[in-house]
Length: 217
Image (tube, rainbow, N blue to C red):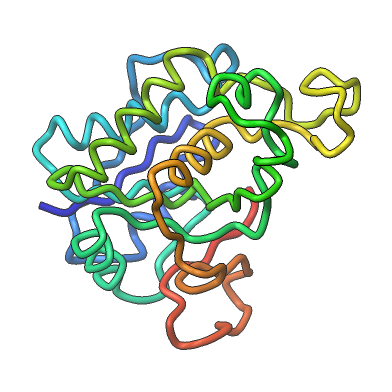
């Protein structure tokens, strides 16, 4: 069973509706009420809880999408990748060393020099196949890092709250943890702009393979 899942608070209901109205043929899990830590106390914990809610509901292939996304084509090819690889991740064009705080590097037992060689993926679109070992290992470790508070941190490092190392520009919460976990598990990312394109509704597609657009909200 395949499903796209998203959780939104009231201010994002409109774009959440845009996402779910943009495709057919795949089950939709629209969440607006979750029992989890607040975004302020544990940033993006809701993402873990939303994916888990889809899994508990019986879905084996789950694609989390941020509310900023909407489909321009049939999403099935992405689920084919989730089925074949056990996951879907698309490279973000950033390095974990720039966007991970000291506390999280210590948790994962890696140096900043090592983290500067770890590419990040865009966790705003994360596919997991719970019928595979790699899918389960990744999600279990990701959830554990959230429970240990590793998503917590500031977006910027202007006051050196995240690190005294000038290479650290801030912390990217769930994305920082997920990217490091994926690296440790040997997971491979799709190249940036393979299936997702940051663009307005009016902008031309970069190529025929683009399935989702996204735009900051």
